[in-house]
Image 1: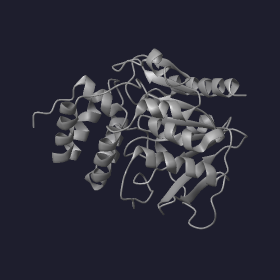
Image 2: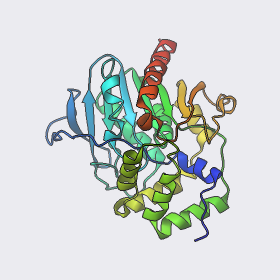
Image 3: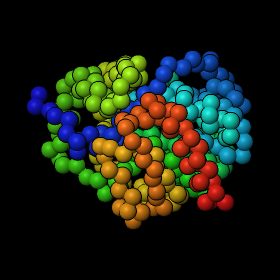
Image 4: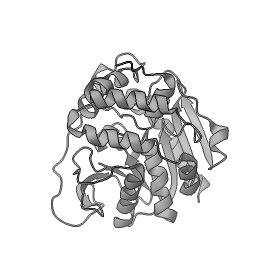
Length: 302
């Protein structure tokens, strides 16, 4: 098909890429009752009527809300939830069209997902929220913070928000849309393979392919890719109006700290010798950084 996954195309797709994790058991979802904050699995309905599962673990005044990536689900944070919940109430959500959430929506957009996350925050009357978003979950969290206002203390970006001014050419956009459009599963699988430079993570990479590269919801995946190309990233950074702290892989995409600081209170720490799924492939290294970053945000926003 003449499609090649260039570094620049990969950088663009990184922001709308995938999350990997080990399989995690799921407790039965509560089918009745109002949204609650008791530990366990719950359901909440979005403004347009989609049923969204969310899981709660732990307790405390601070709420850490985990926002997953493109074509994955809430269980993909399974290596982080037990650690976070020792210190904070921890909430993981399935975005509409992902996981066990319903998929009844006419337009699939980053802005729409930001409204979903902000809607859950308001419905549960959460305050002192720290949003943690991986890849596409980064810009979704930016939008959610803008909408939720003072309820959000800060954002932890996980291998995302590398460069607020990054732009990719129309030719590159067209090439990967042609590839994904003609054979979504194959193009997605090829892309996923390149996102795992680490050795010994076959189970995780297989999980990503099985979950994220299915033709079943390929229309949603394609729609989100198209929308991401239209996102005004500098505006999202600025309108979030909270500290943004990234935990990013050191390569292949450079995190442009100085550029991002034009638009927001931004800083980043980098992890070496990891790929895009650093929180899954290197949780023992990643989790202490995540806890430290959250604590720094809370200290800065007292």
